[in-house]
Image 1 (cartoon, helix red, strand yellow):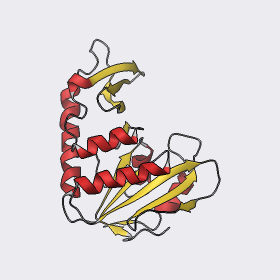
Image 2 (cartoon, helix red, strand yellow):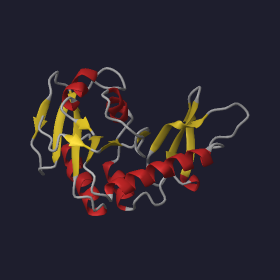
Image 3 (cartoon, one colour):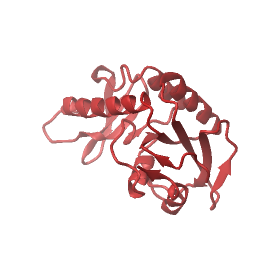
Image 4 (tube, helix red, strand yellow):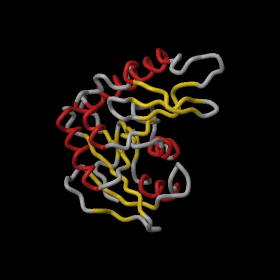
Length: 204
């Protein structure tokens, strides 16, 4: 795979789901948490809207609703952006949903500030996102570059496919790469494929 530069000072997941952050961590490329790491945010259009607004109004309490729960956590939807959280809000007996919102908000605000600062600097940054369709890559690429001033942002877009091999897809920009990899059998995806595409990337 040809990503230039190969060495980056910061690497962030742009999500879609938590697979990206998990694989970056597994491959030693996740030094710090970002705002998108553990959300499920499938809508590229809504994602771009949050980027262009620099997170204004994102995951605010008045827009949140708990729509389900597991043994440990509530499933929470941001009605404004369609973003879903499965890991942030604890399911504790005798406590109402979102009782721990203040703690969540403080943590998210720190991650947003770190992300915004990085993308407004001149650090060499790699952003990684899973996409469902190739056209989403161009929209996300445009939203990032039109919102943030950092001239050293590279992007890696991952598509999942039924094939068993890894294939590089045509790109629309020198600092963006699109790669199709096997889907994998668990939420973590195909660990071997991820290791292969991340093998030449270094975090300084």
